[in-house]
Length: 236
Length: 384
Image (cartoon, each protein chain N blue to C red):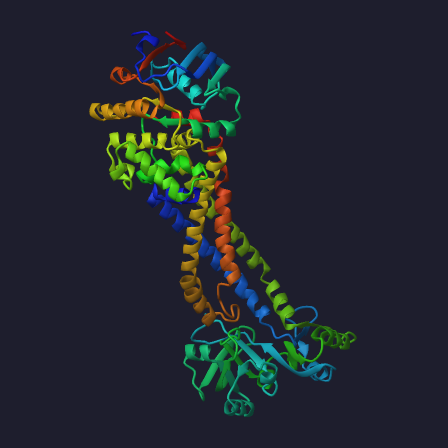
């Protein structure tokens, strides 16, 4: 594995968008503490495409959750875009997530009874946009991911790769600074995985999205500008 | 799309389960409406009472009789325009012993003056008055037993012994829907000849002028010093005191109504809870993209409200043909003495739908709370 900074590609900028300092995260199994992250420091430059790799239980997803404001550290500070999110309240954090983070999950997690366009529109329900504007933005997001001809298809009428592209459209519809992806190609065949990774690379290079991706797939990690490896709660 | 539409759309996820729940709620609503309508219809007679009619009965109990001479005394009381009397006969048609109808021994000269809502042709009335064994019947009971004018009819009584022969003098028609069309009336004089207790009447009915309650008190004061005291009540109060005798039945019906509502709530609660349990990962995703706990509460409760509303409206839609037009018409024709008319009142209809919605909200409270308390990470861990 090559050094993370040495792996930066031309599209990556240098200014840190995400800064984690002395992060500790401990879960409790009954009365027994289970440390997951142990004094971790990390800086993610704006506009980078980072891959987080490591064995199961190494703390990759936990790290992703902390950066995305889904969880709070036991100790340490998480600063994203100049804001210390580790001290934000529940509602403030939810609003911050809605505006700043786009999520891409392994199993797509589209709502089966909503069309592609309605699924993409979901995050916009929390905004003050009019119904027409919401539709327009959802259609734009679906056009970006190449699914403008699938607006009214339900998830069951789409292939796995198409479903993941709808999920990506949902992730970018709010125009967030950061996309976090947890095993985005884990449920896809090779061809669909390549298509999705190509799309993510485009979002990074053309739209300047900072992407943090947890993956076990070396081919997926190859697409990232920075690759980091986590083992037993520390970056190695 | 809106949150409410999203909540409603969620019902399509498991269409069969949603439809079964809506059907379950609708059955509960139909049953609830039937029971409420029983109570409502039972009280309808009191609500339809004529305000200037006063009923005088024995002070101890309705089933004890009054001396016939009290009728003349009451007619002389200030404020009484006309008075008539009746005895409960407990009539049965020997060939149809299970058919219930009301048979009364009455005063032919005054009965239809006191009860103008029963209309009888002049000719029939004249025939009746002149025939000591004459009887006037409602058209429904006459149709049921095939009685025609001039027929000789034999009735039995579950109170008085023997066979009682009557001649059908004619038929009355009601001017109001609340008037029982199954009543048989015959001469008190004929009844008095054959009954063991001579010169007795069951109750006396007066048409009054002025305050009927004051007239009633005047009547009662008149008999205060006599051997038999009376209680006089306006017709509505009298009807209600009669209904009070069935309070145990009404209480039981109310209990069953509550049980029906609880069942409805459990049906709704079960469906909503299953939906929440199945969608935990999805709630995790929604929370991740910025939905707040209150948004999840709105989604869960909104879905339950749509279920309750659809079930309530379907139940209401079914209740009109089943309860009102089906069971109701049958009851009106067969036991009109108890149910003058059996209609679903607008109040009960609104109440049923509101309860379906309200109980849906209540039933979804716990699942909604559980959904709102989900930790985002815990919920997402179930994403797979």
